[in-house]
Image 1 (cartoon, helix red, strand yellow):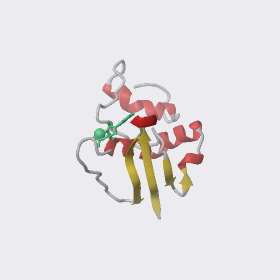
Image 2 (cartoon, helix red, strand yellow):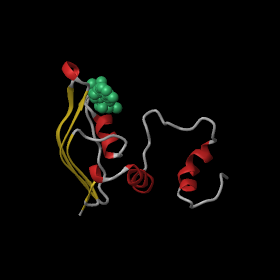
Image 3 (cartoon, rainbow, N blue to C red):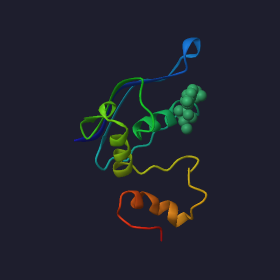
Image 4 (spheres, helix red, strand yellow):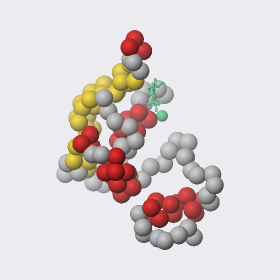
Length: 120
Ligand SMILES: Nc1ncnc2c1ncn2[C@@H]1O[C@H](COP(=O)(O)OP(=O)(O)O)[C@@H](O)[C@H]1O
Ligand SMILES: [Mg+2]
């Protein structure tokens, strides 16, 4: 069974004459245990696709299902829940919270999830 199933996803940025298609009809299936690398030259749309897969952005068109659930049907709270429970995300620019220590940064999602009470 596919954990992630993407069919015909397109993404446009910009409006009017600046409107540009960045992703063109992408299909991708990921099964449990798969190890996937998305490669391509700079500016080819890797980060745009990763942001959509990580539910940080939405596609302009096409279908994206996680565990057979269409992501575009989820509300903001359901998307937050998904990001917290389903994804581990390491950003290119880290996106760490500078006011917290390394351990606190790592512990934060578990605190939000109620798994631990306070920062160690
Ligand atoms: N928010 C945005 N608004 C407009 N254009 C964008 C935006 N994000 C990315 N782009 C453009 O989309 C293209 C793909 O960018 P990106 O996904 O960051 O590529 P990669 O990660 O493969 O280097 C680039 O031309 C970039 O300028
Ligand atoms: Mg990138």
